[in-house]
Length: 307
Ligand SMILES: [Mn+2]
Image (cartoon, rainbow, N blue to C red):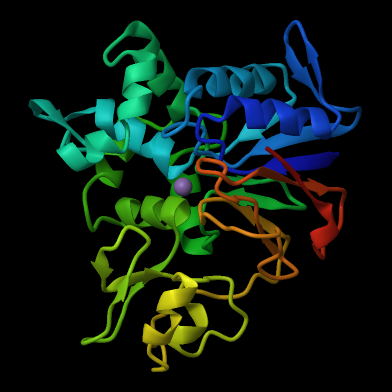
């Protein structure tokens, strides 16, 4: 089986259809059909921000229903579930608070689906059916970070083929719990706190002390080696050694595909075993796929982009 691994779509249905077409998929009455022997794998973050989020969900969902695709859960689907799930014993309160900030990140979805509608409730149930990670044997797929202890914990509590249950969800929304850590890690990646006195300014101008890292880095020695910041902020990163408990490590098993990181420029591999396919389709970037055909060492010439 060949896999076409497709990055974060964020409601950009035109980019999705253009990419499927470029990959040789054909639109039939039941949905998009891949070329013989291929399957589409979506990395999650189907929703939020973009203009046609319901259409994107419908395209992906019909492909899954007809056996032509699978998708993992992104942090945006996980947030959407928490936003609609009441806190146990506290009616009217939700696992994810309805704060101005949380609402502003989700407002386009709430408008398009019509907040509280039957469709809204139905899509939330469907989001729960998306697995937080997929181990396909020859490749592995996760929204942000393939970290074995988290994969094990979540596979134990969300058996494959079953929707995410209420007990797990409640635990995963308890800040600091093992379930919370695992879902944070799998869907948002590995962040570290910079040594005291150090900070950087993120893309929206906010000063931050925690930084996303290149968890896949093959020689993670200093903060400067692994921190993901804009080029103009790179000089602010200290050359100090990373803490002893830094959990990032290079992949040496099957290749891992990720989304989430808002890459820009020409698609390139993170390592011979790690490929990120999120090139900011939500903003003005293209939607990117990696066309995988069995190789255990990835090849940058296999990226395909549209839009
Ligand atoms: Mn994401």
